[in-house]
Figure 1 (tube, rainbow, N blue to C red):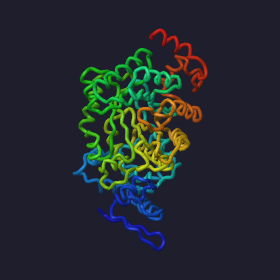
Figure 2: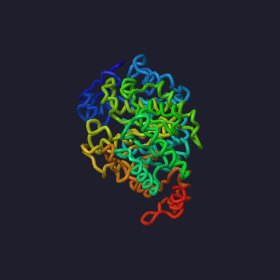
Figure 3: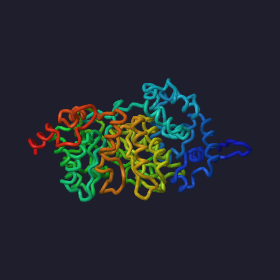
Figure 4: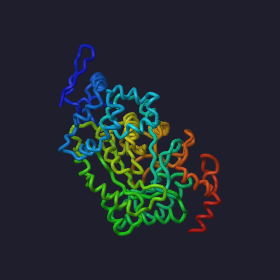
Length: 463
């Protein structure tokens, strides 16, 4: 690979290859320091950003950060690249691409047209040159719509994953959290549970319980048990009512191997879920979660910075037409994103890159208790993501996941974002909320009194 250089004042900075340049141009974060990849000074970072801005976008098609022959994610990126879509931006440098994205010519239709021609490395590169407001502005223009039992991602709407985790998978506890979430208008993205006991019989038990709740009350949403993809496949083979297949994914073949997956297995799982034909308004059947630092934590990053590795995970997601993709942005810990400032920046980067690549991107606005972050930082990120058109966020009782032991967004946090920003749930789910009299005026649920009468009658009639 070629080396790169840029002079600042009287000093010339040398970057040994493209991935070194990308790493040095990345806004500071603890994971890149941990890996020995980050710029040593702010001046070196600026020099790298200026050198990166001058490079043609086409260089990412000529110089793979991880060799083609060594990594199936690289092969997926190169082999699936749409050169016809890329033609509209092929003449641009990375800096020019930023300017084009921010301009009026890059409207929603234009962004959708070029999206198949944008590689994850191009998206990551341009994000490194962007301010927070740039990331928000461009992501807001990217409209990505998916569907299963409702329609996710329409403009002016923000969905929520109702996450009723329980430390013992107690059915009563899960049901109570589901009821609580529904009364706040939460759950249109998915009712998704991380099982405390992760095996096939338990997956079948939980997914069957969720299916009964959704079917009994006619809720236009979907369920998911966040288990390993092989457990979902086994559950499908045993006739379980699986709506969405979940899997954590990463941006390198080696990191995915650490998750016990490869691209062929994901394709098999998608076909199995499609064969059930459980969607009523669409057939997006996959749910993926990602997070900056996953490749580094598995020592599977190949010397590539963590944000670029994260963007490469979106190429994996894009190949399987998911209903939902979620960056669990602060979950891996302060070793990778040290404080609230780094978490906020990373969440906006992830959302921008994924939306630019055509994905229905949500964000788990979260942090671990040993990070230098607090709920005020999460309020900032939640508000910025809502402004940026984030597809969905989490909804958990009291914002404290009592099973996974981390801090995220609550039902009332999501309600706050909808109220302040004038956002609504998915249209089919909103109609159900109104039918049940949970929502009586746009877009507020009827809080502070007894159960909505229509919903109470439904509960009593069908209990």
